[in-house]
Structure formats: structure tokens, C-alpha cells
Length: 203
Image (tube, rainbow, N blue to C red):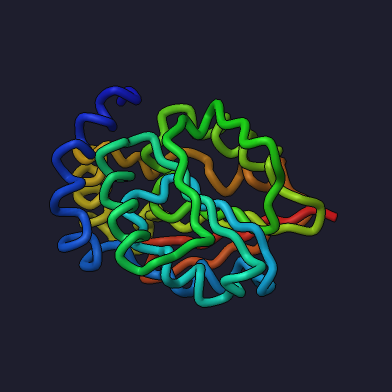
């Protein structure tokens, strides 16, 4: 899987993303709550796509004091996100087209969210490290993504294979790597390994 392949994938899927992903991308509300956002928080969503999570994140922010930044590698997905932001009149949302492995946004954030995006980033370890560098002391970084389907028996291999065809790699050591990056890590699994939520924080 390459970054170019992922961009090609989303060039088409940008048009159908909002109508299809609700069937498979579960646990997003819980992941946002794990960020423990204050009303004046600055939040970054890495791999924000079309902005499906924006309303959930903004529900915790004061429109005058809190700010949300969405970063994505796909200009096609961000075009949809821009339309979403304009339609809702969200003046405290900024969008950035960029590579998560090279991002340098010039400021730090109270909360950072990866929601079903980390498993699609080829150099996912660098993306995590870059995000960690953008986190304020006491902030929280939350990853929500597909698990390893370890409780699914033979169907687990089928699920992992189907996701791999869609540029999602579930077997990398995401949680193990996060344990090396954060002083504290809370990990929650659901539905026999269908998805996991990992919330990391440092002093």
C-alpha cells in the first residue's frame, strides 16, 4: 500500500463515503468522549475525511473559544468537508490538506483524534509520532480503529482480508507502539475485536 494508492482510493470514495461508512465505522461517539475535551479546547482530527466526526467534536466545544482543525491527505475528501463546514456555518473549524507523517502545524492541541484513519496510513508509526509532538502536556490522543477480529474465528481472516483490499491493515502493533509513546494508555475493545479505542496521555 502506498500513499498514492490511498489517494486514488478516496478520489472515488469521497462521493459515497457519507452514505456507506455508517454501516461499518462504529464507536465514534465513544472515542470523542475519551478525548475529555474542555469547551475552550483546541482539537485536531488526523484523517478527518469528509468531516463526519465534526459535529460530535464540536458538541463539546464553545464556538467562541474552542477550535477544531481537520487534516487529511485527500483533497477530494476535504472538498466534501469544506461543504459540510460551510453548510453548518462552523466558523471555528479549519481544514488542512497535508501528510500526517510530515505535519507541522505550528501549535499544539489539547486533543488529537485518529478515527479509522491510522490503519490506512503506510508510515503509521511516524504519523503517531508527529501527532504526539503536536499534543500539549496533559492532552489526550485517541485512536479508534478496526481491531484484529481475534474473537471471530475463521471469519476474522475474512474480515482482515476484505479490509486489506480496501487499504486497511489491522495486524500492525498499534497499541503496543502507543504504549511506548505515552505515560498512560487506556485500551478498550469491542465486539470480539471488531474495533478498539486507545486513549494516550502524558503529564
